[in-house]
Image (tube, rainbow, N blue to C red):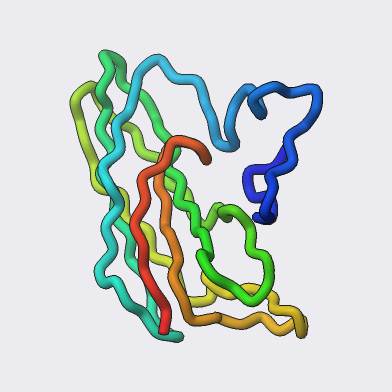
Length: 148
């Protein structure tokens, strides 16, 4: 099972799994719970050569101190080839006391948004991208940016 399958008109489900995998990609057990704010970017429009800065606030909402792995996924909304559903582009580990929150910052160079086109060229295509942050590949908060 993969978290970053290629998109198509119909999603292929495994016959022996009624509702998909038991645990999503990046899932981890913990003695506490975490809440994620909506991710924010420094701008909404970028050009080749730019670095995309993404920040997200994570809060320990439980009663125990614990470590959380904050994950950042990128989804190309429109491409000349069938893109992946989402791709893991960054992660950070934070240790939080009960009730503590921290802002996590990711810096993605423009190369993180390139794809291999149908001529096998590694290119940055203009368009809309969705950035997703969360504790696993399913429970995510999103923000959109564009490259011109």
